[in-house]
Length: 169
Image (cartoon, rainbow, N blue to C red; front, side, top):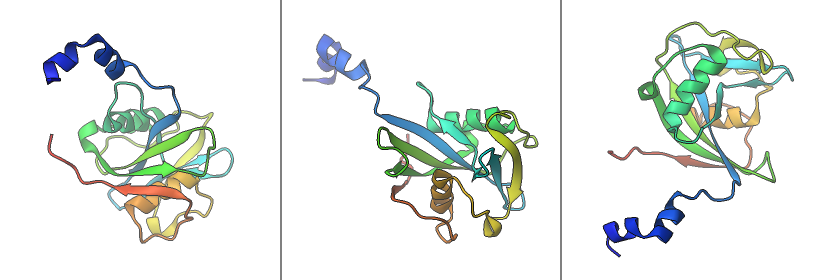
């Protein structure tokens, strides 16, 4: 079939636009760096530290989701063009019912001062030197940090890691 015939075939059109049964979640973990090279971490009420981040909504790019989640969680503002996707992490440990794919992202340019925007989730935000990360890290956040800086001593977990090289649009 030629591309025009394929696009006009009702069965093909339905197959191309009908979503599969949900069995995966796509999210973005965001390494936010300040001018001193420190990383922004949030203290969950459980006592575990984590990076900002969250789910990619239908119709969003990973970069758009990261910029939105950063603003929603920390009040920091950045644009999608300032979000660098550095890798993908396929989580094989934290859920037996759902495949979690996390895009490891880095933000170096932003406006504002971190503030707790979702107090039910995060108790406080703090800037932390990458060489002084707390031992109680959320496992997916530790994997995003390891994708950014493989030299860091971090807890490892059975995640599949995929580096990225950007293709021209």
